[in-house]
Image (cartoon, rainbow, N blue to C red):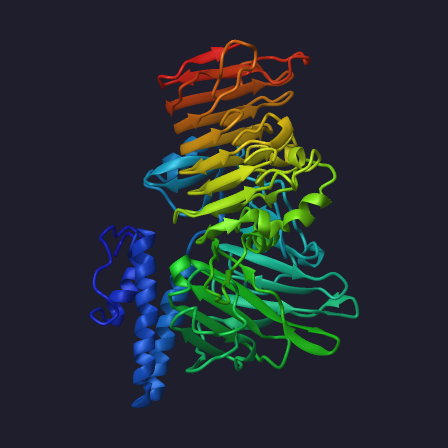
Length: 589
């Protein structure tokens, strides 16, 4: 096909009716992810079928199974373009790729990242690297230096870091010989006193260690073009043989030592390259259903070899349910804490909640409440790039009993504490005797500039607080940083004693946007004796006039919206441009 990845026809048939060539061509050329994932899954099913047939012809069948796994599955996954591409402006991106292209595209004039989504280019805000988790994502080094990041010598890479080299490998010394600039290469550095480095190209992995304070020569430990031996039975990935691979029928097949992934009912592939009795071994775990790849390598401590933690290379999803499977969590608190450790801008993590959650109980009940002393962010914290999905209609409750809640705990704890770069979907949250249902506050901290905050198909209810402690008991309440981008879509927000939604900007902010498209508000509060208002948009201190845009669509409420000062005692500028496409009245003060 002259134009790869542009076959828009759906994937048909199954692994039994489709031959190897048909499946391989689909992996190479199907445009839509659902079809490529189907083809990838069929390739694994076909491999399993062929492996079972290997009793009569073990050599040729095993080789054919591996060829499909490594040459086709690895080819498609390896060629998924997750690099960062810099262009002078957004128009240049659109003109260069009018029909879209996979990857991250940065407009240099604004610093914003653009993605091709649903047939159109979309602005996703300022591109920046956060670097949380086991390995810090330092950022991307571009050929023209537009990223502002440089690395002249691989020996000088930061400890516990990852660098993306976008066509610049030839400009960095002390990398492996013969490295291609054709695609983004990754340089990992693990450890401080005795660091180990991994260098990943499109189909090869090199490794080097330190000796007497200096790095050793690079050693090629993974060549994805060379064959591996098939393991038919596996109980623990830690015990895989050198240069071998295993095809898992389902992630519920009780194999130990694998990363936590979502594909509980789908095939996966795990490959071991190099000699496991030495430091040269690397493992790669692939879940085609989730477009997820993880890697880990051998290391030594106290004279013993061990496998390092799995490091994710693609977007991941974590499940919260009662299955007891190795790749899921039974408690939401544990799942979120795990996601907070490894999520970053390059690797956002979605926590998918599949059962009802008593968050009050999970946090520690009365003992936890009594431990709260000060600071108003003591609920369950979602760090940047951790998403929460409850699309199966689950309910999360955080209802603190009246006889447990205190005058200290109520204003210093919300159900969820959110900071930015989070997508919260399908959640039904019910709270009582807490500050807010969801406290989405960044306090004008520049670390959170230009981040997105997305709420879709959510229901949040605040049942009020005892003894009139903290009367501003809103369902979702937000405070912004510069360049904020909030989206509220098809949500129901209700407060027994206050308003469903509030947002305030902060001092010296020059840009920001709030878009509401589909919102039902229940409840209200009388701020100035002029009658109840169902939502508050507040301005605080002296942001640039007209810099914050508010777009209102499809809002249902018995009461108007109010735009007013956040604090009557603080001189403030109304920085909002209100664009009202709904029928709700807006009271601007």
